[in-house]
Each structure stands twice: as structure tokens, then as C-alpha cells.
Amino acid sequence: MLARFLIALCAANVLVSPAFAAAPRPVVVELFTSQGCSSCPPADLFLSDLSDTRPDVLPLAFHVTYWNQLGWKDPFSFGDADARQAR
Image 1: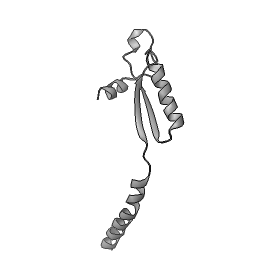
Image 2: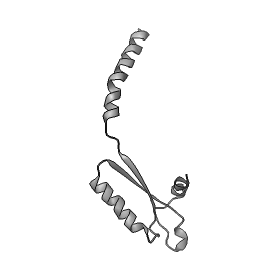
Image 3: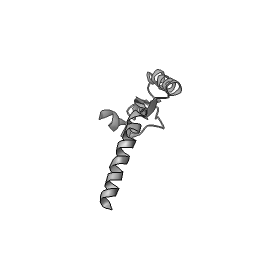
Image 4: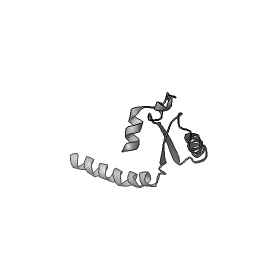
């Protein structure tokens, strides 16, 4: 019984794997940004345009904290974004 189950599982894996391999996968684009950064708005706009025009793109915006020291605290910023960018 167990042998039949394992054979069926292996057969199902062989049949399903090409379907997953053929499925389109999104391209992940990460942008590290901040509301306190003067050069970030063009990059934010570019990421937004990618999101609107490219269904194959998964845009991610991470708001970093290190611009918060300039007097404007970005309410979307978080320390893990800084660590992710550093990695």
C-alpha cells in the first residue's frame, strides 16, 4: 500500500513539475526609499510605473530610517528596511 502511494506521489510530481516550471514568475524589484529623501520621488514614480505597466514585475518599496535625522520622519520607515538594504 505504501509503495503504491509513493509511486503515485512520484508520478504526480513528474506531471505537475513542468506546469510549475512553465508558469511565469514575477521579477522582484526592491526600492529603498524615504519621504525625507530629495532624490527618491523619481525612483518612486519609476517603481509605480513598473507596477502599472509590467504585470510580470513585483515592486517592493522599503522605507529606510536613516533619512529621518534630517528633520522629517518618514511614517512608513522601519529599521528592518535598513538591515535588509545592508544585506
